[in-house]
Length: 362
Ligand code: NAP
Ligand code: ZN
Image (cartoon, rainbow, N blue to C red):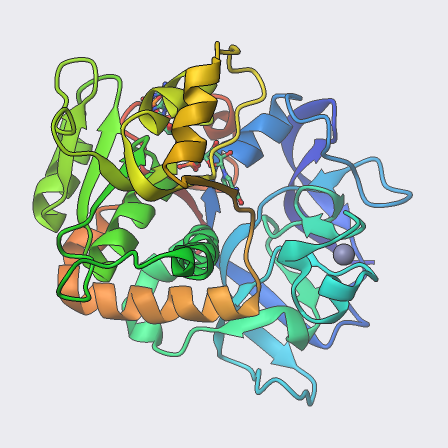
């Protein structure tokens, strides 16, 4: 019997401990050790018992949490995916069910909900000192010299999937400007967490005139990142840069219905809004007939987007490799704190200037 130190909870009631668990790794194709694991609102929600959809693996009283991970391969049997000892890899979160989308490698678009998510629903996650996996669920980091920012692959793959949705839906009309680019188009990202910054960088890649907004000013850490990456930030309670000309693409990471509908009425004809943030506890809001008319008369599309598949992990790694050259150490500044695995208070106390906190397993 071998015991591996793991960060666990009892889903969905919550709690967190750093303890030794006996999990048999002998059957796995690939053995891995984490290098860094990112912490996000989902991990904190599970630990705080706020996510009723989280559940333990079948027959287990514990769930190992963690779904944002950068790992090193310590052993690999022969496999069809080119994964070998010493590779840096990012494990995929969703594991397919049996629906047509899952069988086609697109469990992000699962049709019946019968998939699992590592560290969230019915499958142990990646916050443990060693674990095993199948090579088919590992995405190799093509250029390991990008270093620690590879831990942002998992959150960035969500962004890559959402922009795939943008690409599909924007074909409904001529969305580009008269030069055939997005340079004269405006995009707005609501929220200023890690996903919001990743959305904003991706939007700048497309060429959009990109804005980030929140209901308050930013702290020094986030202000520095805004300056270094040449983003535009404004506090929507004190400014309105869209009073005269509207917004073409809105991406919401707040999950707050009142805020979302405030910005729907600022959108241009043929505009697209991507709903990404989730907040089941946010208060409701009044939506009247004029809001609905506004959406219809202007051909506005509201799109929900969740998760991403292998292609989006691979795109995310390409983006991070390019951004590492473009933004240098500013990209590393997205990692605002590093803690050791036994520092379990981090799941209940979010640092005030957090963009991305990571657990360092070295
Ligand atoms: P996060 O750091 O909590 O980001 C949420 C952001 O929204 C924060 O910057 C927050 O600002 C801001 N916000 C909250 N209420 C707001 C309001 N009324 N107006 C403007 N901004 C507001 O979380 P994250 O990790 O970046 O993730 C963003 C969201 O996406 C979360 O809801 C998460 O659950 C969700 N998510 C969705 C998917 C998906 O596949 N769809 C995947 C991962 C995450 P303050 O911090 O100042 O409150
Ligand atoms: Zn499915």
